[in-house]
Length: 88
Image (cartoon, rainbow, N blue to C red):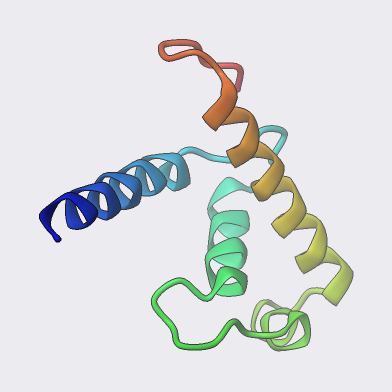
């Protein structure tokens, strides 16, 4: 229905805005963003494994896991913080 479509569109726009911001405490936000997006599998039918992403970015599986965890934590914090505040 139109209401469901509008809700999904709104959620996707909000996610896009959140992903545009670097995660909190990131030394290399562009690379971390790329690793996170690759690991999340957004726009793909399947989520790639830690090993697959690690091979592409020439890092360890543990490093991919850490980047993913940091991004998820950062996204969770940003969705809970009051509008207009920026803790980064």
